Length: 156
Length: 301
Image (cartoon, rainbow over all chains, first blue to last red; front, side, top):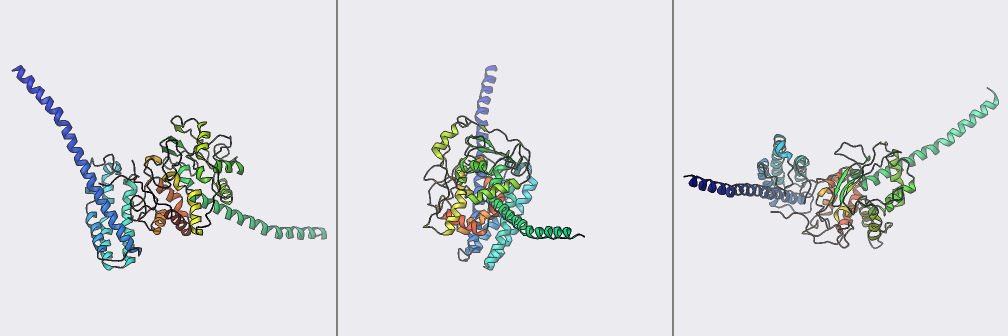
């Protein structure tokens, strides 16, 4: 019996040792996945804003793609805070750690993007360069308000 | 009233009437000189390095820590305080510091002070800058010693570094280029010191030849300094000139994201004060540099 218990104990210990890193690595994978998803979403917002910027500055012609770009920004702006699960501020991320310590403020600033993003769609539908430019300015200000507090400079 | 007194009074009034325009003219010249000096200070982005914003320090009083691959530097006080600043400096001493990297005591400055760029500053701009700095409120704040790793911690090694990497020079306009290009070249390579952060360095800290503005992962404060050559994939080749002007004026990138870190400081306390014509000139110069393929930003997922 004693031998049996010892054997079981050993199995448990070995299993524990084996499982613990697995659990850690699953969490790491989840954090990396959240980071990747966020980076893609942010890049998509940036690319769409950039494309609209070219239209607003008269560097590109107005096409129906402008509305699509604005709709992309609008859709992604609905749940920006949701792109920042705790633990996803991994080494390669430019997210500042105060996101998770000042969460209510961060959440408010992230949410402040929704309204200007919706107005961007309205502006894009008009096809008017100046309207698009104005709406972009407001949306850009919302990006900046949050980035100023919660985004770190590019780090290696 | 005696005749003599009247004569004296008239003479005094005459002198007053005569002297007044001269004084006014001098005040105006001073005003213009100081305005020019402040403009040079903005174009040179002097304030971000010489002010310890994080520690709540006074403007230009130094003490800002700057993290680099060679160690931690603390900027000196350049307010006119006679004990701790540049209050006792002569213009000749200021000139030697800015254009040749030599301290008033004859020792060398570390090139974290970008004198390899500032050496090209024109005489009038240098004089105006000195006058402006002297006109600022003095702040008594002693300078801190740098915290560097050997061999960089040996100041004597700087004469070796300078022999390798530094050549005092004046700005040379290129007669085949436009006036706007040359103005931009002057602003970028004599004042704004773009290359001091955006050009990669060799292991001794010299700027790598042939890699001008191609970006580095070893920027100040551990930041990435992006490739700002007009290379379409790895640089800013897809930007318009207007995009670059907007960035320098407001910190806003073409995708409406904004800058963070040292470059944002340089815009906020420096470049955004430049005239539109000067910002356009810088953009002209940068966009006409040879494109260099060099990927420094992290690959996106």
